[in-house]
Length: 319
Image (tube, rainbow, N blue to C red; front, side, top):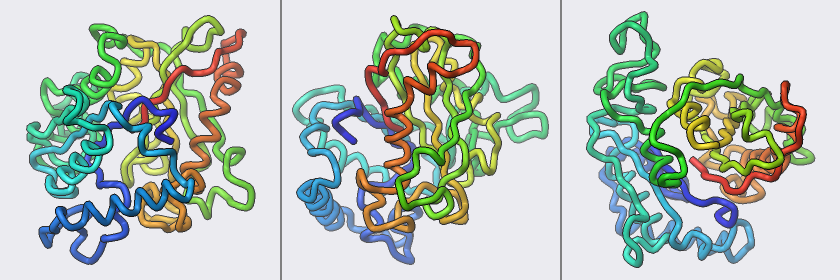
């Protein structure tokens, strides 16, 4: 869906098509065998071209000069730095980083383990890792929230994508999450269970973004394995550091949800468990998200407390 996305952020992820070369050495994660990415990346490029030729993905030229944000914690042992360097090589070539400065922003120096990094301001009263904190310590055990003093991952990636459009600072979240049933958006012949999807997606939309006169950017956030609402509930969504920027920057955040019905860890499909076209426009999970996004104006129009219609969202950022 590169035609409708303004950019992409990858936080501890793997290159497109990585499932083709995955094996017992976990090349796309721990990379215990020290994969030779100089040989692997050309294979993944061939896969991209074949997907494009078959009309299964948008034309790759849509990616030219779009912005990319990449995060890899210096102490992340779940997704190795070598894997994220491969992501950088793949996406850098596709967006043309050598042609225009400032397209890629790399955050590879924070001494964090595997997880979503916040600056600690909304973790709770206790020290990170304690019973009275919702965040784990930055350095050590993988967690859905890692408190890394002074590092606002959400703010950094959004500012890279949108620049001054998001405002100078965060604002308190003022609206509740909107619950959206995912079943109506599942493709004909598929079900939530065989698509590996949870029953509900969540949307955060500032009240001003529900007005016909207001155009807002749309940000899609794909959660990590075992960090979906099925496992963590919805409290996590309000503490990722994203919704405060929604208020400050007039953005709508969409939080689609996978489930454990196909992948026991509730991961988004990256290996073809839901079908061979999983990473294309025909993929069961991606098609559901796309259908939900197309219906977003109606969803926001019907949200409680909003009596006016909304214009179509202007852009989307995919994470």
